[in-house]
Structure formats: structure tokens, C-alpha cells
Length: 198
Image (tube, rainbow, N blue to C red):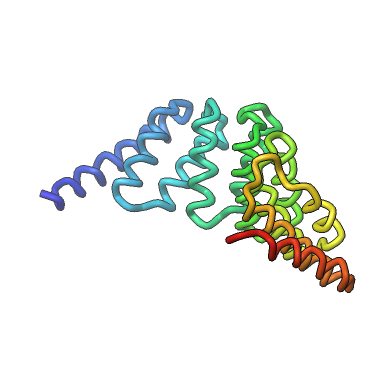
């Protein structure tokens, strides 16, 4: 029965491929073909089908764009996902809110583009200051050797920061001072971190 179902899906895929060639402007055929490829566990084909629909300008609404970029990142092309989402922001297809900026930041981070990740996470943080985002940014600053920026950025904890998160920020500040060869400032920050109960 599973074998029969598989054969059915393959037949449907063949028909949909013909339909997308005949009627390329019909979005439904593209999305159905992508869905069938998913059923057939052909994720690369599913993604390229969605990307084709995107190239032809058939995607509408934030949900469809977010589905595409999340799929791109999931398929191991976070750089492409970041570029696509950035373009969707610029074209007004996706709202530039804190949540979507966090998503973009995570794509840049996965793509090892630390400067872009930091920049975008900071935009998200400015819109909605949260301790978890602040800590993420501070850690990335250390990774990217932005030590001076890290000491400044960790000075004031986000309004929602819990005690241990404040400790974490102090600890990161201490690491930054240590890298800047400022042992007394590093020690002060580390002591402050140590006063935070686990």
C-alpha cells in the first residue's frame, strides 16, 4: 500500500511538473508540486520548486516568504535565506519587527556572518529589548573580537533581565575587559558576576 501511494505521488508530481510548465503563473501548481516533493522526501526539489515560484514573483504575504526562508535555512543555505529575507524586508513583503529581525539574525549567525548577525540582532533589541537577545549579541561581540563594544553593550541589563542573566552579562563584560588587557576592570566585572546566585 505504501508502495502504491509512492507511485501515486510520483505520478502526481509528473502531472504537476507539466502543469507548471504550461501554466507557470498558476501559483497553486507550484505549491502543490513543492508539497508532493516533501511527501516524496525530495526536500531539495521541494525547495527549488518554491524558489522558482519566488523568482516568478508568485509568493504573497509574509507567511509564504517566511516559509521559504525557513526552508532555505533548514536545507543548509542560511546565507541565501538571509539574502531572501533581507530583500523581503526591503520590498515590504515581510514586516521588519523584532521577531522577524531575530530570524534574520539567526540566519546570518548560521552563515557565520557575525557582523551582520550582530547588526540585525541589535535592530531587534532596539525594537524590543530582551535579556536573551542582549546576551546573544554580547556573546557574538566577543566571538567577533568587538571587545570595546561588548563592555559598553553589557553595562546596562535589559529591563526583563533576571538575576542570573545580569550575572551572565557581567561575566561577558569581564571577558571583554580581560581581552582588552584591563585586568582590574575584568576582575570587577567577574566579582559582580560571582555575586549572582545560580
